[in-house]
Image (cartoon, rainbow, N blue to C red; front, side):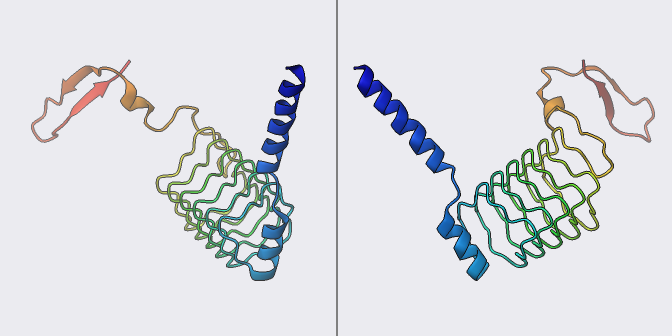
Length: 185
C-alpha cells in the first residue's frame, strides 16, 4: 500500500511540474514567426527580445522575463503575465485587454498608447512607467504601485457598494441643488 501511495505522489508531482513548464517548441515558434497565440512560455527568458507586433493572444507568460524587450504594438489580449518581469520594456501601442498582470513588474516601461482594458494589475509595479495616452478603463488596481510610487488601496473598487445600509442621508435644502448626501459606516 505504501509503495502505491508513493508512486502516486511521484506521478502527481511530476505531472504538475511539467504542466507549468516552458514549452521549447512554442519558444522556437515565437522566435521564428513572431506568432504564438495560446503558447506556453511560462518562465521563459525573453529579455531584450524584439517582439514588435507579436501575436501572443492568450499565451501563458507566467513568470517570464521580458526586461528591456520590444513589445511595441504586440497583441497580448487575454495573456497570463502573472509575476512576469517587464522592466524597461517598450510596450507602446500593445494590447493587454483582459490580460492578467497580477504581481508583474513593469518598472520604467513605456506604456504610451497601450491598452489595458479590463486588465488585472493587482499588486503590479508600475513605478516610473511612461503612461501617455494609455487606456486603463476597467483595469483592477488593487495594491498596485502607480507610476508616482503611490500604492493603491487594498480594497477592491466595489468595496463601498458592499455596505449593508447607508446612514446619515440628508436631502439638500436648496431647491437649486438636487440630490442627497449619504455617509456610510
